[in-house]
Length: 411
Image (tube, rainbow, N blue to C red):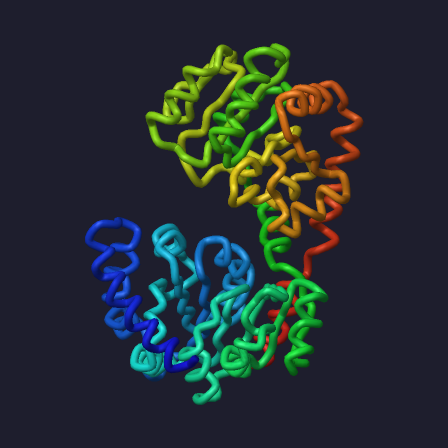
């Protein structure tokens, strides 16, 4: 199997170069990796002390972020190397201030990983949640580099727990310690012989809690909201927007305000959404904001988290699509009631919040109408449900400090 894996890696690498000609995202994936070694050599010298963090994409980066920033603050003499597998993570975070260099992880060939580790020579390697590359892990073990997994999640359907996955289990021996999110992960790892496991929880809770303490002031949202009840709909897709627009057009009180932040901010899509809304609407890109408007459309990225701080309630989009609901932790951290669509079973935090009744699942237009009216008219209900959301976040913070204690002991 190991031989087949190596053949597959080389084959995929060749095919990606061809696909890159026709696909912009794959083109970034391929072209970005051409610069990896030269970028590393320009920043990292043989005398540097290095901590290396690796993330698959943006979501994993957000889990690792509180650890990265505290390591950089507590150990300024160490250089931080941050790598990504996906362009969707790298392109957004490539100028991250807490890292000395951000780059792509090379494809997992034996030659690549040897050169990568020769240049980076990390004191400790930190993998966030996923990303198990056999050649890389084998080389880390061979070089006796302290390697940890943080915010890990293991499931029964993964190859490690199947008869055909024994060769992958050998790669896991590179990890000095596993910091996992739940008891199930610890039990599964124990079944295949790993006892170097700590249930630390999910570092994302620490991240979203920190966000509530930062300056979230936005003058244009302040001007739009004033003192009126405001529902924020974040990361919405067309099906979410269909229900939202129906409610706004036909049922919303003049004293309700709505901020909608679509997942896709393509100008044509935003304009079509704006035209479908019969109430007075303003766009972020308008720059001149009418505080008499009832709906604010966010046609930009990067400010949704701050906007949630102004919400009296939140609807989180994606729950009517195959991939499922988007991030529910950010709005929950501000202590507000939540609602989502019916596809959320891939996300433990959404399951938890639904079970706690801080988050309500909406399945059709009637659900939307009744629940949105409930949220608007019943302030005591909002306070009770919001407190459950906030308590859930507070009850699950602390993973970062557990992991930092281990890292600090090694540096």
